[in-house]
Amino acid sequence: MDTEKFRSQLLGLKQELESRISRTHKHIYHKQEPVSANFSEQVKQMENDDLVAALESEGLKEIGLINSALERIDNGEFGFCQQCGENIGQARLEAIPYAQYCIRCTA
Image (cartoon, rainbow, N blue to C red; front, side):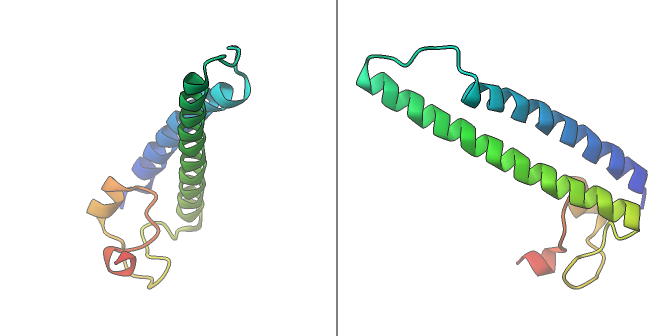
């Protein structure tokens, strides 16, 4: 298995997520707009803020999975299921390069 190919893919994905999180973080915590006087607009803005916060949270979780996958590459454990120890499979890793479990153990 070409772990360097996966390392490169993981690092690219991590960089993309960090950029996205930076934008969502700025949106949530560094708003330049005043709060609308219109109650329905305030509700829409709060819903939007909740969505952006959820996206940020999911991005942070995915970065954690990527970091774990990079550690497994460094430790020579990449590509093996963390539950049963079997090979995860090339196709699964190509679809989800930070996969921790084989198909059987995720079901």
